[in-house]
View 1 (cartoon, rainbow, N blue to C red):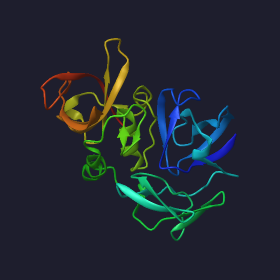
View 2: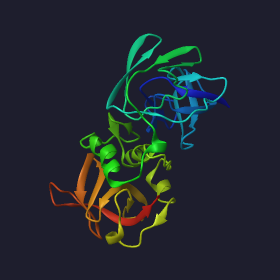
View 3: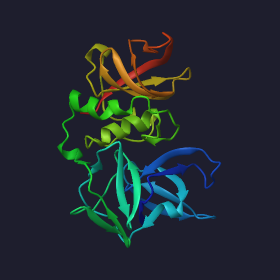
View 4: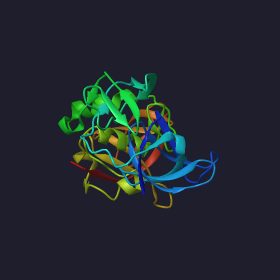
Length: 254
């Protein structure tokens, strides 16, 4: 196992070592991983430190480290952030990590990273309604992207995981995995801002998740990140009035 760190703004993680394979998730700049396998054509299999999610990515999108970088996690705080990568400007999205950054600079495996912008410390963020809206609302109208975790495209569980990351509350990657965590909220009327609501398909499989804003509204990624009404049966599309998702369970993580 070789420690690594993502060195591009957004790195696709695929189910198999091929560009034609399904994108199962993404790494953002500064996220650490371990490399478990090297394949052909510069593909490597990685396991993300944050959620233990596995996938294949291009070797050139990960810097190999001698050891993991131990430091408190700070996240980039602007929608778009400019860093210097060996003196060359690079733009990275909201929520990227810069482990080891000190006085605006850090060296990763011989590569100099500089940053003078806004950072958010998740350890100091209170999990409260005002802050949840402050982090979640800027994603509204971001397009849905299967496997996506960034402002450029995000799926339902990636959206929830990303918002929770800003509050130092790590949750798993997929909706079905997230539904195994937290405590059950017995009734919709008891839901609080920040609870996660899960939805199932006709076979009873969890296929969707969103963030409750109150007992009657949910923030979720479906076609795009949007706010829709929710009742005891599920989500109602605000634009069409159509019922789109069947409510299965609500969980609380705080």
